[in-house]
Image (cartoon, rainbow, N blue to C red; front, side, top):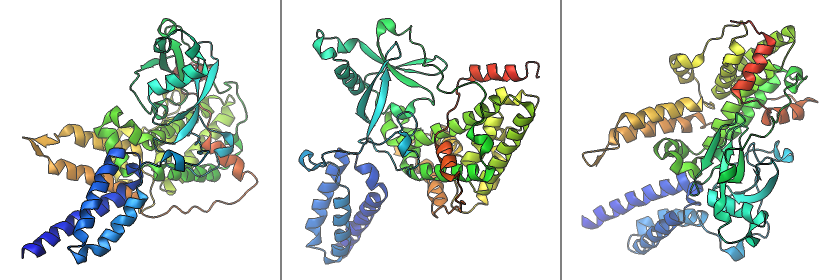
Length: 439
């Protein structure tokens, strides 16, 4: 009886380990400590395999998974030239914008620019998870500060500067700062004496009116490309990133890089709508553009892409746009209708991700994780149930039939590389130029 009970317990532990490895093997490749624990458990299980023949099939599967989750590749076995990934917006390459998006990991390398107070810059190659101190070290090497007296490196600080002029001093121990930058924010390296004098780079978008791609593209094409791109980004986000984002805050940045980029994209789409409307001077043409955005939002909703749908509607509801004698309904004031709509949808679905994070935050902050020293199982079950919805939304592949047209690649590139104004003051300036007396 004791042997049978012992076998049952070992099978249960092995099943749990197999499920854990199968679910989180991608993230485990970043954690050396987790790999050591898994390998220790693996060795112990292999010893038991000789005593319990019934474990042989599961231990074989465990062996295959452990080989997959090799966390550290010896230096001598690394390829001579590791691929450097373009990072979504700030460090992208034009030739890569049409490629399918893949998930980012902390060890991935990227190219990035770090600016000086005079707006000159150095280009460095960095890990996505690099700390502020590491970034400053690379900048220092590029600027050849190593020839200066000792202590010169300590005088440099790293600052994130937004297009509005807002500055955030980054602490030396902060890591994975690239994915948390605003849409048009940039990194500046400077001395503390020059911090106050930092000013943002000139606007990256020409604020003069122009005939942009949105005026030429068909609403169906634009909407379908939005959905296809956002599905790629949504698929890159691991379920665990939602929990890390809410429970660990900034401490979990390395594990939430893909989620941070998806949230940034949501903000980008919202500002894209406002930018395009406010750069359209002719009233008649602007009215046509508003109708086009409404149609794009409707098609995105038909595609079950609620992320794009709500981002577009929120862009139309931007105060600088809504003041143009138009009345817009704010979808964020009533989440009940959203929940009713999405509950009737079958996968694949692209949810409005900020609302998932809001629900998780409510669950996390509304009850304690530990009660009288015991784990609050009810809270963790509620969190797990919310995270499972993400898995359900992605349980079937997205299949969109997009007609191949001469403008297909042009529209695709346009949708994936929006140029937007995220400075609300500038958006209001454009709005008042269009209609100074609107109420």
